[in-house]
Image (cartoon, rainbow, N blue to C red; front, side):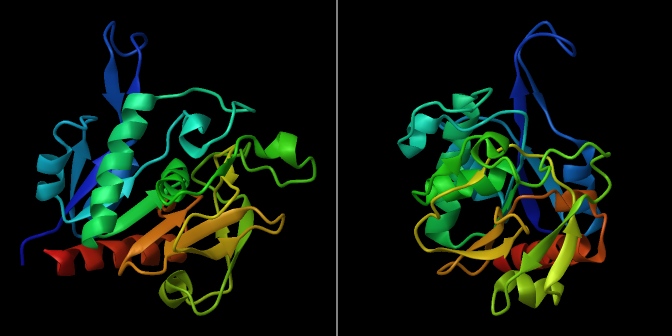
Length: 238
């Protein structure tokens, strides 16, 4: 069987450091975790103009995280704690995410990718967790990202629970924003002890899951199970 092609959205940066010109970037483990689990990673440049052609090439979509926030105007809010805005990236990701939603193509939203999925489904975001809840957990962990830092409670009778078969798992954490109002046709499948939504899934889509942590690090057996199930579903989508 031909391996599935997994589209993986890139981050973009302004001139400096790597190049004197604008450049794209992606952590290696986004790509190699997908390869390790039996798929071919296909990095996606930001072009709404070419989104339809790009969409036709992929069997599944990973919406990655990054050092940026979605423009709060996109979900009807004024700026209140958002940091770096990257509208070209967000417009492209919104476009191709909607295409996958419309055609039942598998979607995995990771960290900012979960937040993007929620906004595409008409949800809203907490723009800065720490300022909105002084008693919240440390969601921007101080220890290395390839280590876990807090637990997530998994709801039974959800796709995520069916995949990991556990009611509590350990995750890493690298975000300062989170879901506020849940998007249309989405359900909560995981939450932190402080109430922050850590996992969502689409109620009318065969495989559409968002997680606030970074399973591409493959730290835990549950990370492996989640990523593998996504790849397997993309294989069936070919």
